[in-house]
Amino acid sequence: MGGSSEAGTLRWLTSVDDAVTQAKSTGKLVLLDFFSPT
Amino acid sequence: MTYPQSFVQDIINDYCVPVQVNNTIDGNKPVIERFRHIWTPDLRVLDESALELYHWNGYLPPAEFAARLLAGLGFARLRLRQFEAAEGLYADALRRFPTTFAAPEAQYFSAVTGYRKTGEANALLHGWHELEKTYPQSEWTAKQNFD
Image 1 (cartoon, rainbow over the protein chains, first blue to last red):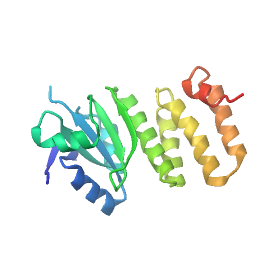
Image 2: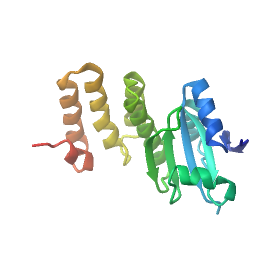
Image 3: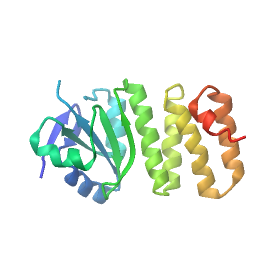
Image 4: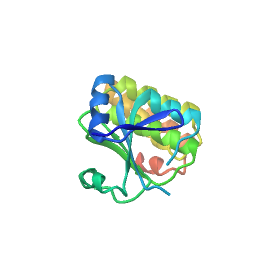
């Protein structure tokens, strides 16, 4: 399970499964962003 | 990728549950394999079963990102046959970001949405006429020309 991280006022989850669970309860879609730190 | 602009954050917060996956972390290998991730930036729109409904790669400046995201969310709602939601997203993309790369796609699928919602061919033809008039050089204008 993942936690969440913050960038600006966005609260990014770090687990796709957690995001999907939250999408089910909110009716929102999941925005998945794969990134490589620079 | 960071998203410091408030108008981009607002779109994400209004419509999305955002999740970021660092592709350099070993523990993320299963999700990287699951989604066949290969290159960053890599953005996906998923439904509540984790089915991928829209995808794009590459950096976009803020207004382009916002328009692409609205068009992607619109397409996701269209594929889910949630036509009113799709209409609203496409209308927002076209009203706020009419000169972006994503705008012709939004116009194309806005017309498709109207047709799928009503079954009226005129909705499709009118929307595609607007596409041809407003974005004559677009790939999406070429795609709607089935003569």
